[in-house]
Image (cartoon, rainbow over all chains, first blue to last red; front, side):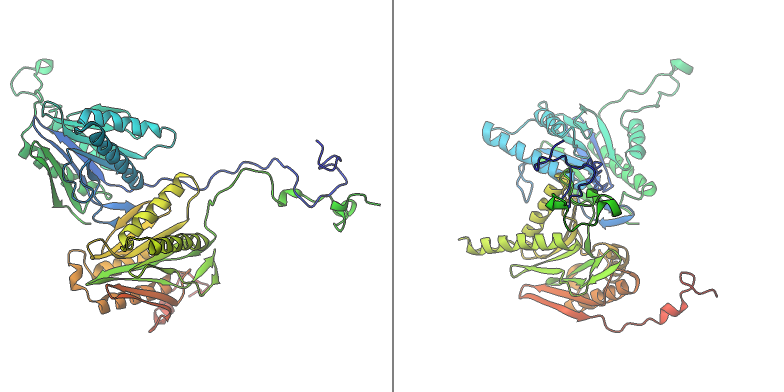
Length: 261
Length: 260
């Protein structure tokens, strides 16, 4: 190796005061760009409605940041009131990523309406959300998203996502901190898993109870029960329950108090 | 004769060995902040009937060294918004410069309405989020106080990751552990902020600062406090914590050098 002076650089005898190219070890970043803000979300569909719910607690570690930070958002409506929206998105995980994702999807749905002169369908929005998430495959939005609305036939539609955009349409889904507590309850109460028709047979001949769409009031009660139970066993869930009920008449938003301990 | 001027005046290599250039700048990769250097501790704030109070102490620490004892960590924006900074002080000064340039631009622009505290908070949160997404964070946790678009008192938080949240009372850093429980007891969240007077809010923050001075090793008894109302900002930057009582310290045993 030769330096600009024409003399061998870094050799013995010459002690330059300026730096020589050294093979400094590549330093690892000490900065971790994610955090977990806790909380849980839950969505259930029926024959002519969809419900998306989430608690309103925001945590960092053992601290409660705030008791009122909503996780469920109207997409494609007025910025202040949410009026005109037909799609609802819930995000749980890293709240800053959740907000960024919500704002991007909101912009996309609005642009769609301006460009095509008709509101975006839930299925199209669902595919677009997957694309947005996958677009950050190598620096993901650290969130579990659930998208809800009514499909072209007016039936309740629910799509659930992983952080990098894998998605599927489902009848019900719980996400977030207390997902592992709520999801088995939903399997049993919505899809009637492990429920059998009494006296229909012996052993393997016992006939399983068939899942069918549930009435709206019943589903609302299931959601409230799921959260009051989750609050008992998970410290990151609590304060208030935010529910968005999507029907043909529009989106109704209701809040119920949860335990604040 | 040594023919290399670059080596003149240096300790002789045959006596002291060659200089190790590793101590000097290397042609390594571009580096970003991976930890803060000079830092400010807690910021605390409370909403009251008709406004918001915000307070910080005047200390900037260098690790455990109380390095600068007269640093103003409450920064005024426009005539009805204040930002309280915790975390890295140089990043605070950068953001302050950023906000000043926005303030000047807004004042020269033809539309008369100034950015309110809510707009300012949204902007700051997006700056933080952008910088964390570039892996080049601004190492701060801030509280923004003022009024929203409807003229209601506004208090919200933003941090280096872009996380945001709002509550009737907020505190960053150590204050989240020590001040928030005091504030939650004094002003329960179910009681409306209309029932909290300015005097109550100010004295509550003073109490919190005192508790923080007792128990936060990186805090100071000199502080700044800003009261934001629709009439304007009342900012005091050279206050002293009053009515200290260290009598309790005598009874604390088990941490120090005492043996009995």
